[in-house]
Amino acid sequence: MRQADIARRLSNMAKARRCGAKTRAGHPCRQAAVRDSRRCRMHGGSKGSGGPAGERNGRFKHGLRTREAKTIVGSCEKRTGRLGPWFKRQARPRSD
Image (cartoon, rainbow, N blue to C red):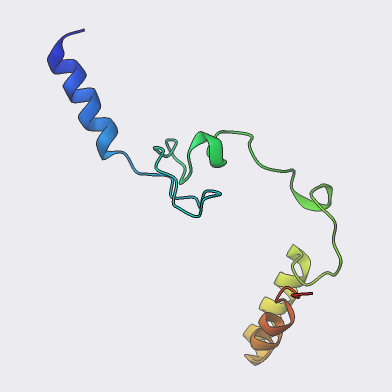
């Protein structure tokens, strides 16, 4: 490989969008993001990463954040314009 090709590739890598996910140290990740994604391969940018969708992913203690509840609240809010603030106040996680 020629030196010019190496320099061109390195400059392209330097211009790449960064992941930005919060690391365990609290700083943003500095890895390059995967193409067509906002995150790097270690923070969920690769195809098939992440948990399964729906009920197979985690325990549910209430139904406030389910897709069905959000659609119901959205339709009620369109009609009345009042339910949104209540839903946001109720959906806050408890700090026990």
